[in-house]
Image 1 (cartoon, one colour):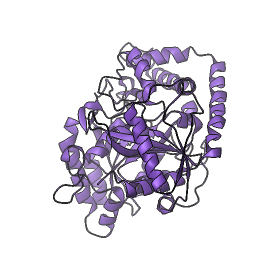
Image 2: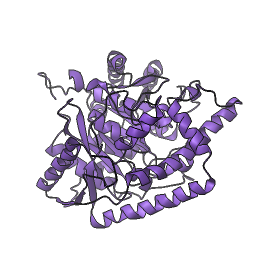
Image 3: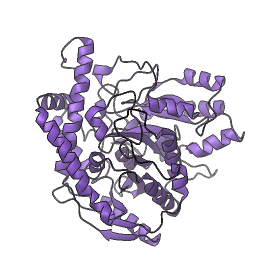
Image 4: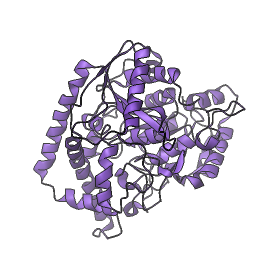
Length: 477
């Protein structure tokens, strides 16, 4: 919404920073300068974060020193940015993954993605909160405490990129890094009223962290307030390193250019319920139907369809792939420490997963890999019929804090699958998917999101569609 002075205001009425494209342009044309922009972002973080707990580690003095020394003249020149504290490291900052087991780990260098942000001229201000090792759809780690939703302090900001989403939604920074292994970009984007694109498998290199089996399902990108910011950041981030295990198909043009193109008349499949899945809240389904009507007004064809997957099957498959990686990660840390796992090293839910998957036969991992490919082929039939698949992002509205309580594993098992029911399948298949803000729930006034997915390599069509939706039903104004 806009205040009387015309400035864009975020949740709670705070003034939102201009988006990254506008920020870089203002620095480039001399309307502002990188130091002023950086100092303003620091001031917003210091003012707003005590009530949200989104930013967990900062490097303000180092960032200002980098600005003074001169930033690279790239497309993100002067843009302040935050990085999620999970799987992507910022030199000199703790790399905890939200876990007490890793609480004293300090990054010795930048991850490749962070280095790409820096080479593009971005100013990295710190890292954001995440649930322990990314294992929760709500950001409530025991190590650093819960992140609160800027729209309602009693509610979750989503997970596992909840800290990044809360920071951007509150207006601390225009954009923030995020990652997604089962919905962890799209879930917090929906919860906080942001645009969140999970790119195709292999689009962004995870270097230097070997991701083993989890690399099949997890992807790095960002949460943003505008489609053009997401496209710009993807242009900066995209591209494999020699030796990467996976590489996405080359785009036909830059993602910024693809976002500006007319997507043409698309055939869109509408999915609002999941046979053998969780119940879908009427308001979540209603948001998807409203988005479908808008797509029809924009000239697209929308046809109702049925799910080609079962959420429980997807959950089991994804669980094995990520669970095996969890065991390897914890075992490597314990080997470094030279001791067994202590009772208070990890949260109860993490401990349950670790004990379960460390006893898993190797053949079960092979079966999960095979099943992931089969699910990919099954979902591939969708994109033989449709260009894009539309659904709610979440099956239920954003939950209150404490609903997904990692101290109570049974609570997580009851609730977690509900919030990944529409998202996780696109991780198992590696296909790109995005959450687009679309209205608010009546009970709490919290944002609702709708998800659009495309075939592998289809980020361009998603960005082009999202840009037209943003023009027709702007969520930032």
